[in-house]
Image 1 (cartoon, helix red, strand yellow):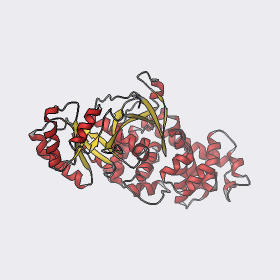
Image 2 (cartoon, rainbow, N blue to C red):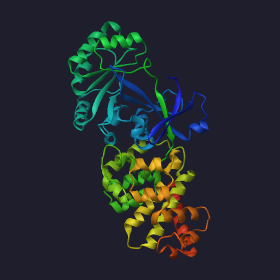
Image 3 (cartoon, one colour):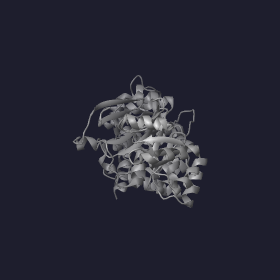
Image 4 (tube, rainbow, N blue to C red):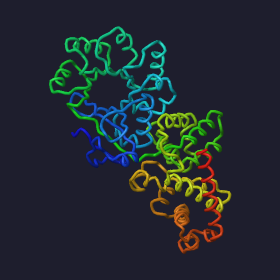
Length: 445
């Protein structure tokens, strides 16, 4: 496997695009988020798990200046950016985690059956940490100890509180390796040989009874790339403020409607293995109820940790288009059916998700299949059929300066749409633009 290459994640599969070195185009790199993953293999050479690694760009090495932010970006990109299925498939992901995040509620954004908490060697082991590890293990997490290289009293003391020990084959003295491995095995812990770079090291690790193996001898990390999906920091702060005072669903719904990128990621969170709802989501309110306010708060905190803050909200034309379009459709739906809140909700959701495939560089069908949206919303976006599909056609025409009124009065328009006269549509379009523009200015203030 080559040392450096980009793999772009598209919902449903991962596609190798091209080689990339240190001289990758900065303009191109700034449009994507990156994530490294390195295979962890079992004794038969089969894939067992991945270690997920922070990557600032297409180059295949880490540039970590803040451990907490690096971990937050790894998790945010895995769950909300690229997608758990695309990154991990059916396997688990090992995530490096520092002391601050271990004690943060954010850690519970990660489904414990999909993520292993890998404690960095810089984390101080004390009684407080031991209690926290017990809480996390009771919650279903497996805990791995990273970069172990010698047998010590500290290691013996922490072994009862972890599940996995990773022994660094580059740092461990060979004279003490057998005793170190046998001691860990005697405590019933899973042994991983990491940084295995030669056939001889692999043979030695197998002979000493290691369970799992990781290193350049098997594979260098891959770099996964996905289009950047920025979340506006002011909006996240307002959302957290609402959650901190136990705001009701109506207020949360209103705030989330101002943040299309957060709504997209919220849907991914709802449909991750952490929830397993077994049903489709048809409104933003339903997504809020299904997720729960505490989980939304965790996600907003994680996005704040991961936020680079390098592009203002108002500078992203896709965010503006999605927000204005979704508001126009909501207003039009409410005008057509004044007492049908569910229809207005579905119209708003249709508007937001009608552009997700552009952000992700895929097709509507491929993206929407993974988001678990209700069938009428999916069909509206993919085929433009039904009342929601007609609203989307009107929104597209209005946004492009087309004759939306002619579409509303066309022979294939549902009953009642002919009442959307040019004057009504112009008012709705202006109201949608003014609504979203006002909140852009508020966010920029």
